[in-house]
Image (tube, rainbow, N blue to C red; front, top):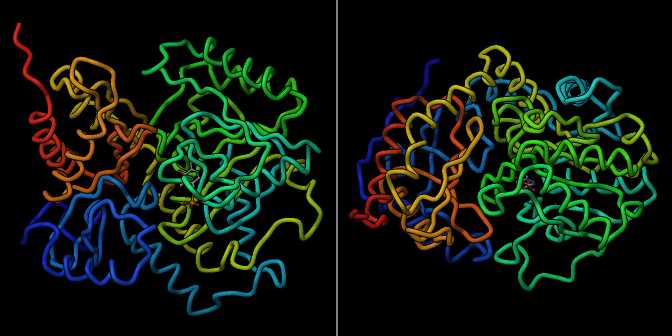
Length: 446
Ligand SMILES: *Cc1c(COP(=O)(O)O)cnc(C)c1O
């Protein structure tokens, strides 16, 4: 692959640089404080795994805008497809007068999502909108109201999806009331609960049976790998048992693949690692290479249970976003980018897998594909260490490495690099993060 920006870190100014600082002042005076800022470094362009800021600094991107630019920044093939479509037609509204791109994206999602049965798809704009539609469709199909989600889940920031999101702060605090009939059940969290998949599944099922009643539940909505919750990968067997429970009780199993899906985990969909076939799948983030597009895909009888006009929206499945998505699918297959995600996983294990034994501020390193979490703890304990996370993020971003936070206790360093990142860039970024880890760890003398 060739890139328009050399794939290495290069700093010309202190970070944030003077132009970023000036923009940040304007932003503070013009943009709602409710839109937070992880690192006040303003970007100008990007290529592959490198972002270039307005001062000309080249930064290593280990966040991909929270798992959106999974296949690299400003992909020439995707840009060209979107530009060509924008010059032809930008909007008709699919439910007024349709167009082929929408149908082609639906065909593709129906083909790649797990399950050897008839499927249908609806396209919308954002992840939260996809989750909302999955809930509406499951309720319509089952005639039931209760929705079960899992502790530490993140499903979005609209009013319904805030109610489905675990953390009160900052996602929900002060912004209720929230819709009822949303229940958060205990999840399998191997690092924190030490339960086997079967044991954790029984705990979840017991919660559903004793708090809600299985026959009341329309849908069980889960992230097969919890992203914002701290890259929590439930124990083997957990989702299998819950999928059986859903089937036995007529509950729609919804895999929220918005962050972990579309290749990032080293499979098309992260639920595949658990050997489960969901009834519905939601996708968004990586779907259109950075343009807004999201989808609900699943069993035809469920998706078709909604009356015409019952789901949709003005911009959903926009011609330009769908053109970009088709180019993304071509690229994934042409360059075998799912295999690349598995290679990035190996590179990350090789480079950072030993952190818990070297740095006692690290409790665990976990991950799958190009999706890793580093659990930060108070040395010598399993107590979450948000102060350490803040220090690492500040050190990394002021040294040209963009990383993400995660976890209900704000104590998980989240790495979501694009799958095209090189071993050299991972090594360089890890060296920067290690400077922080060494400073935060206590030296243990025997
Ligand atoms: C990001 C995310 C969402 C919400 O997507 P938006 O496009 O921000 O609305 C929902 N579910 C998961 C798992 C996500 O990671």
